[in-house]
Length: 98
Image (tube, rainbow, N blue to C red):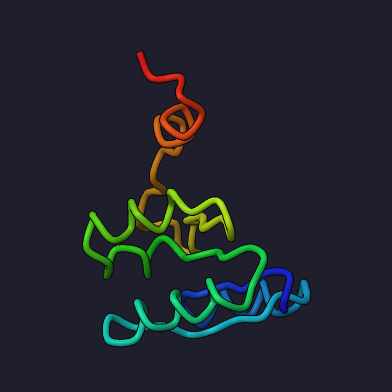
């Protein structure tokens, strides 16, 4: 089992690879299957923000609700896409919603 896996664009993946993270280059056709495979083999799954936009909003929300393994959307190198705010999601998981 790998500690962390990054799924995203090629340039951002190069940086994660240098840190020892297993990386997968994704596009709109394979992103869902790559994330599902990573969830089976990694302790932490990082998804680039430019790649996360290829997922339907409902699917992305379900993935981010995962506790094991945690799935996080991280900024890509260009910073073109925003990263979802996970505060509400964490509050929901902890039963802290008002």
